[in-house]
Length: 296
Length: 317
Image (cartoon, rainbow over all chains, first blue to last red; front, side):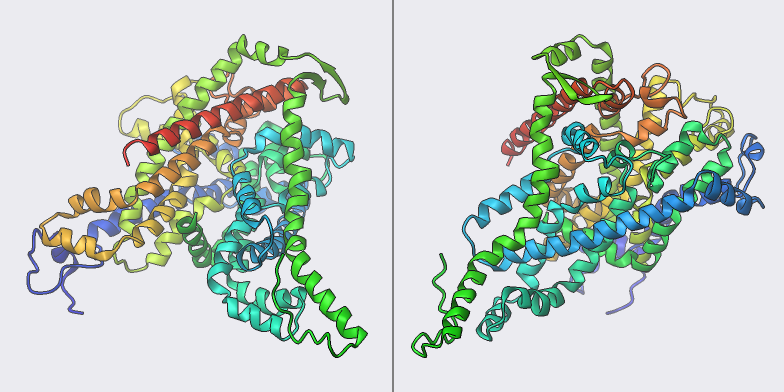
């Protein structure tokens, strides 16, 4: 590939680069980088500023101009949020909830996805259509009876109230089905059958290994979604019971603690774990979203 | 159903163990698919389908949160009350306005952003992850930050506005201003996500389309308009529907943008959405029956959207 200066090649009007074949992949010029840098700044700024505000005092936040750089109060604010707003407990709860939901969703979705992708059974088409159509049901539509149900079971304020309803993921089933229909050759399943392997053995020794990349992506997406889940946890859990981080943050926002810098410290605590996940697995998460998008 | 030949089903060998084994094999073949999909449907029946149907039943009763077991039949009264309820219509209007204010810019920006990300870039992975980062932030955390940024007296947005000569805006109490502010949170969180979806679709556009367009002398902008956008039409349609569904359910942002005064959506209900109104009726005013009726109203709205979408899609094809 000849290294033509980007901007010039990009601006080429008409069949300017007549000699060589026309550009297949457009190269980015400097303006592209500038605009993208602005977008990046806009995306990251509120997060960075959360940290800045969390490192200041409430008094400083009530002054103009607002602070643009870190102050020395981060430790104090974090420890107040940690103890007074019980962010430590909330983080632990959220870790348990998101971890359980992610693991459960991945296993159940892989089983169902495998059945839909590679096993023949009566009614499979209809059942798959049913799975997909459940994706369109808004959570609001079932929230009242769901609340009555968990009240009946005395699960209000218990973590199973937010774990069990979340284990069902139509998206997960569909995602795994699409992946396995591609990545798991029919011959492999047939061969295992001929060797006399039971379905469970096939799942363990053939399906799970083949599905591992998609399972990882689905697990991360589910973890992020569950960590951030808001509507149902706010209804099912309270700040005084066993809250998730989101429920605890709601308490902060409602003036449970009126100090803005402490509120920002709480927000930082609630966001930091996911940012770390993003830092490590960002590329895979991006890949998973793009993959899901094309199929969806 | 399946008559698949079992491996070495040596019936002739006569061994009982073998007969048993082949029978077990056939059962395994026939039943295990159902066993594999059963967990999904069991959980869905308990936590999805049953509540869904029961909402309709609850909407026809007077049910209070304080004693959910005591249900009194009231027929359609919950619905007729909604019809006469100014707050309901207000919430409906706000949901539509905020929905437009957040969905339209979000998707337009996402389209442009995806176009830029589609260029051959140095550090493209970095940019993709960076623009997706807001997606990792929760509604609660994001809203709390934006409440500060949009503060009337000391917020950064008003400080920046005054620096370029505009007066301070009351982002919490103004009707339009508060709705713009709430929409901004939505736009910030979801634009990158939608951009990635568009990007995935753009990468599926065959390169020779661009080649021939370039040979015909189309500029970049013309290529974008006449090649990219038409190829993306199904994806654009898809994101429109998904974002609209998301917008009808808006809840966390208006709840927390209120700065501590509960589920009213501002002192004058100026940014109370339907989702928030449902919550207020059910869990603040304790009227679960009325909340169910609002849920059904939201569902009807979604059906309407789906119907319109189908019409639109069926039209210019």
